[in-house]
Image 1 (cartoon, one colour):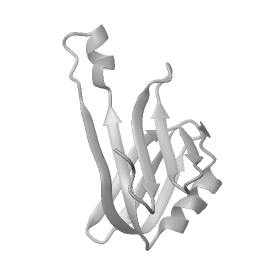
Image 2 (cartoon, rainbow, N blue to C red):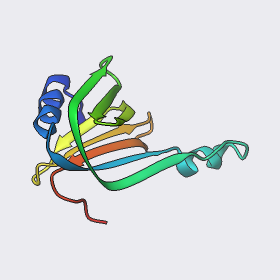
Image 3 (tube, helix red, strand yellow):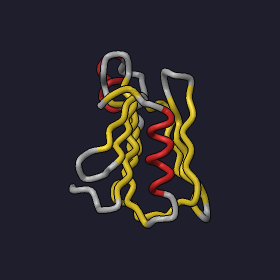
Image 4 (spheres, rainbow, N blue to C red):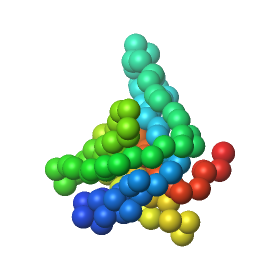
Length: 117
């Protein structure tokens, strides 16, 4: 993965608009929080292979972290804290947000084919 390049990622997102795609969205502070503070709440969300169609996609940010929104007919998919991206050999857009220590905090992935388990 490499640091997000706003214009490149925006163009790729737009290429997925108005197509039926599969989305993977994951957020976590997982065990990271509870290892250092036994009073910390462990939170996370995970969805894989949600089949959606979105009509609008936007990525914005300050040069360090980015947020991406995908507008569907009845709502939005939204991820914040993204830092890195890659378009892999299967034409899947993979975006992730890592903390200062390189640990995964958020992931948003889009593909025209289902993700493997």
